Image (cartoon, rainbow, N blue to C red; front, side, top):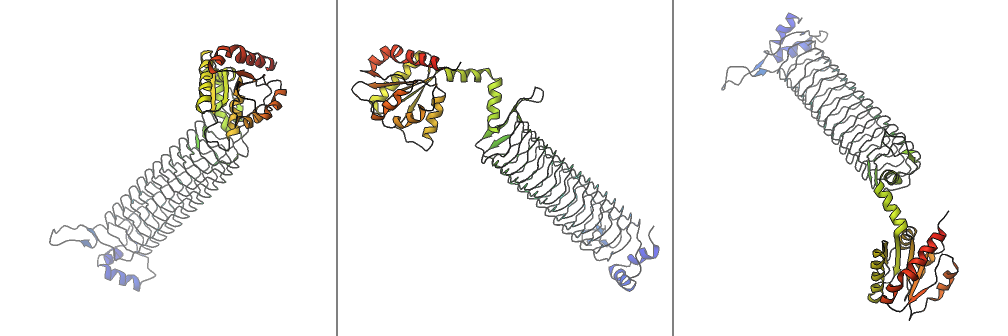
Length: 509
């Protein structure tokens, strides 16, 4: 209960109170359980005789006992409340802007809807306080204790909470835009749905925290501990997650596009349906993670380890860098027997190959019916190649025509070799040959089970180096045709049948 003489002195006004405090420095005022809502009332005479609120801004409450005091709606902006005991006090809708609450005790106090913008709460103790919808823009909460606070919809825009302890704090839908949580303790904190854009969590301890459905664009988690935390449906666009420890965390359906995740330990984390487009994962550990249905588009995966990860439904396109270890990747869903592969980029293809009849049929069709046609594409020669293509289609083949007249690129030879290896046999028209000799020099010696049926217009001679290829058993004798029409009449007898016969001879037992 408040000391009656202290309360009487308070009612004399700020000037008398502050003078008394200055003259009696050894006395610690006791205003516990006092109702201060009518002390020094603020009135606008020309409008009403009713007081709007108590104005205690000019009173010195440093080291004052205000335990369980009623300060509802009281104006304390700029007031000195350093080291004051406000535990259990009711400060609902109070105005504490720019107030000095350094090292104040605010345990179990009611601070909902309070205005604490630019207030100094460094080293203050707010354990189990109610800060729901409180405003703390640019407030100083360095080294403050906010354990188990109730602070849904709290506004901490640009607030400084470095090294603060927020263990088990409940801050759903909080607005922490630009706030600083550097090296703060946020174990088991609930920030579900919070706005955390440009927020600094570097070095923070977020173990078992819930940051699901949060906006985290351009946030900084460098060297933070995210183990066992929840970030499902969180958006991390352009965020920094360098050197984090995040074992057994949950990033279900998180967007991690363009994030920097280098040197992180993510072992055992759930990334189901996460998006890593253009992220930098260099030197990360993704062992035993759930990467089912994840998206990797232009992702930097240099030196990462993803062994024993589950990759069912993964989408991989144009990844950058060389993966360090990608052994034992599980490509089947959880309910089926595990099938593993050792290469991420092959995972989706192998699964489709195993489980999709149409794809298997397509591959069988390519390898048993594809015919690569090589030649030149100026008009006279193109007419012959087009006619060959049409005739092969009629006979249930899949013709693949390669145009050497178009601009070439550095990987032309590799492309031709790949197409050749997919084919049942090759038909090479070496009439007026230019690029074909070079391509055949790569194809023929390296594909001993691939028949090559060579044709040439009768008025032309084979190029000088061609005789070198005639010694290979899989190269058929050159057939010389007089015209397009004549070639089509004998195509089965002179070209297709000999090529098929040779393919059957060369087929491995």
